[in-house]
Image (cartoon, rainbow, N blue to C red; front, side):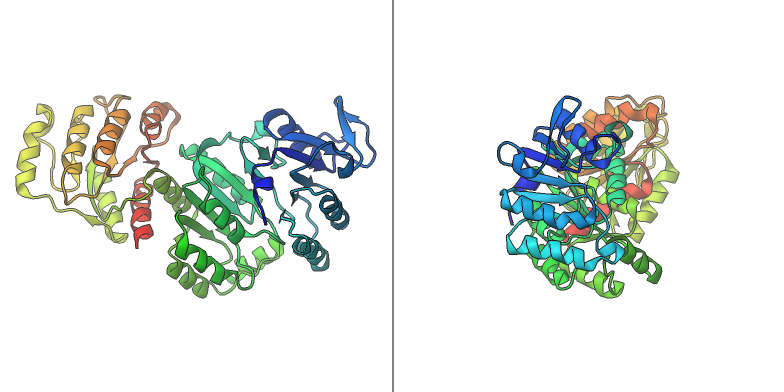
Length: 454
């Protein structure tokens, strides 16, 4: 099935517009797309009429020109007839926002929709979903724009069975400075599922990393996932729900998914080469790390810090994650020391972790980072910065980024995420370096590079 009409439509019909309720999901979707996105947008209601001066068409067949994508926000029992109308009028595909299908026991209704779609090779996203966010073409999330954080443009695509989890992930990634390419809420995945979308996104020029929230594979699709991963060119970061008996019951009532036996699932994921995150924090860190550092590894790290305590925490985290904290030869310690500021030379500890102390400034951090990026025994640098130090300036991010690009090795930075430090953080992120908001997060980012390689 062709997915371009859904993810990159040139025309969009929203079926289910209300002439009296401006907060109806269909109305929110219509106005958002009509005013802010590129696809030509039309509204459909059997009564016809006008909506704020725009014509309301009585049916899909009355909409002028070819429709790439139909968004259905109507009663569940009306959906099969709407799908038939879409097929008859050669619509490119449909997104079923409506709930009331298998998740509420109406498996028969969902199977009817699926049978129609498969018979006519007609792609359908949903039902029971938010649909697709794929700027600049389309946004079917029935959530007012003013209540959401505007995602940054970037290279991370997200797939999710849960619309709420998907929006949370978009917000968290945006807060971490990570840009989004496309996102899809697949809901009950009656027709198009995560495997179909993984194949699509793996050849998408806008996407470099794919994040997947999964409640359970459909029958036989776990094997298809492994087959996909054997040929995938993009890394896949996966967050699984339904690992416990209670979680399994919850996902079954949510999207009618069968969570399956988690130990078996975990082994499938391990063999596939996907990166399974254990929680949301790991998921965000993995996605951010891989969006910045796509093809590199970081088996041996040098930790450079302004605080001995932070360095010790990072060292412990690396040990627990199986990351080697590189041994620094004595000759190199002697060579680096005179290159540092005189106020730092006598008090810095230059055994990895490299503790430059709170007296260090931009030049010290730049000098030490450059020094160790040159060394063959260092694959990556974890830089632990405290922006409240008096000798640190907002230029530090651009300076560190320039040397990281020169040596083509990753530099992962920890910096507290506080509003007043945003200028420091943007100095790194705007130049393509990942910034973690915790020491643990920085270690997760390094771990992601190594897990992908293994």
